[in-house]
Image 1: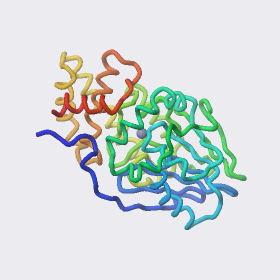
Image 2: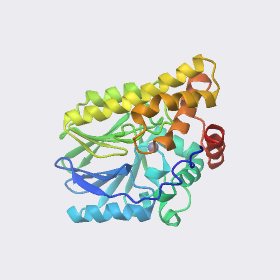
Image 3: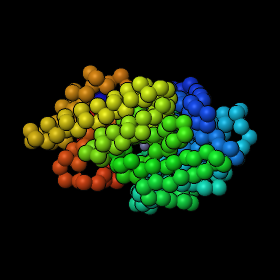
Image 4: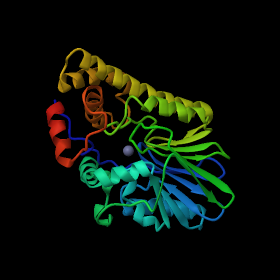
Length: 317
Ligand SMILES: [Zn+2]
């Protein structure tokens, strides 16, 4: 029985929550759809990850305006994926900030990723014609770490290692131990690993755990409140990445081709993780990338709309 491509059959709208996590941090979450983090400082607002289109970002702005009239001065891109980035223009922010590694990926593969992701998630790109032509370019880039001061509030942008992509950045409020993780951490949602570094990702999660966050906004899924919930989210993400990587390594060691490895991995992971959001969507991309990393591609190959469909046909056709 063949599965519908990616999330093309997922058309059901999700219920949005906008919740305060700590004195200055808020989470915009939507039942497993991509989240947005909001930091309200003394004089300005920071938004981390923008939603997929300006039209969808308007709903985030509407929620922000229910709690503050301070201007949105900063947009932070935790990584380059279009579903996180292409709503940026709606905020009218003075600065769009990303790691230099993320900017390099936008240069190298931003256009291809945009076309690919729009094909994968038709529902998430509502009013896609509201996206400006071309790419969303950072106005500030950094390497490793930087601090922003929203008045007296320090906001740290940290690269704690590769994982979901080469350029992953987390947003950290040291004063209130609150963290916005982007797609490095998911909760009750399947990690997308099509552009991932499987060998690095678990250690990067350990680095997040070492900060001992009291609250964490994952890339998808509900905000995690309390150290126990945060550590549970880190652990389940780490388990998925390790289990998938181990199953693919077994397939490669047994001399299986990609399709046979995929069937082995899917059967191995489905009982434990099959109820997570976008499991069927992510698995073909995740296994393909893990197989590449275990064989001959240290860095993720570029996904295009055409390669997406060819891969799906090869594994699910
Ligand atoms: Zn992503």
